[in-house]
Image 1: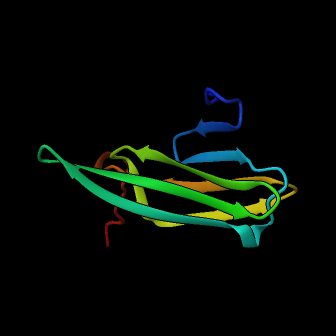
Image 2: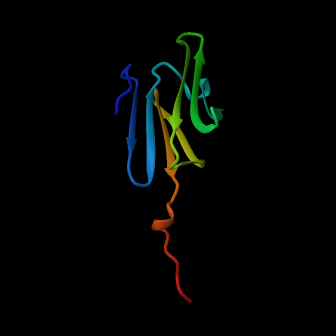
Length: 102
């Protein structure tokens, strides 16, 4: 799924969701990724927030709302050649668990 400005790509599979955001001209030192929790009308929402800032390119801010199957405890971020890649691990559902019988 491409974002309206053709600057981001979201890919999901059964184990993870990956966000790829094109930030040409920004170095990894210019970019900050954080999580944000919000509550609106009694509903809880989680977000991944991306803030990029440098003198030549100016400022870029965006956020992506996360849905219930994403965990904020297992996130990895990588920045290479102007492409920020954020990988979010999905929660395991009860039906996916297996137990060993001793």
